[in-house]
Length: 279
Image 1 (cartoon, helix red, strand yellow):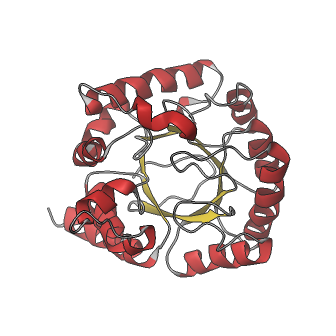
Image 2 (image 1 turned 90 degrees about the vertical axis):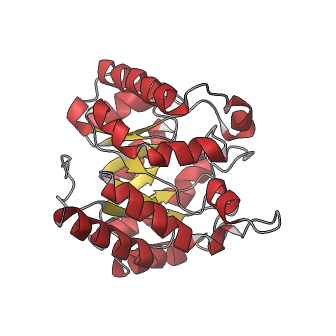
């Protein structure tokens, strides 16, 4: 598996657990909104098998409005500090350079920016200076209107091309190529058919030469697949489907999968590794 500076080396697809310190996440908004509950949640995820924990203070669900910077800092930094103090490998999920900077100072070892550095011009210089791994996600715009941007002729080819261009821009901005992780951006300016095509072609992203993070957890396309009589199951009822995608992504060479509930996915990636080893 690919290794990244400052992160442990895993012999299989890593499992990134999610802690949303938000009142309005599509999946679990409000459940871990105070610092104590959020830190406990992160530690529970590690106990369940998470290799690293991604802490975010701003919902990126479709249609979500942005939170202001001071509120995002108030939500995120104490949780990052608390988890890092317990020895957890912490990632910060943010589109703001100031939040990334302060989170790294508080102990985060990876910056996960769903905009790939596009939302805040100061992000790439900040991460370059911090010299930590940086997740560059495929992104076409903020949550308020991203659904209108889900127009593709060849979704796999276009996402790969746009990610390659963004990776080149980030490298030109000073981030070392060996510190970049790529994310196809499932659910972001994508319809269900687009997401399924990207999962089916996970291996194609190896052409970009960087580790791939797959973040399918509880997303709308899974609800679309599982819908009965036109009614999709609620987000928290999509964890078995999430584990299925995690197994596929792991088998197809993903570096890590990002999930809200860890235990089933931790098992899934280990089975995928065992099957791969038996080929």
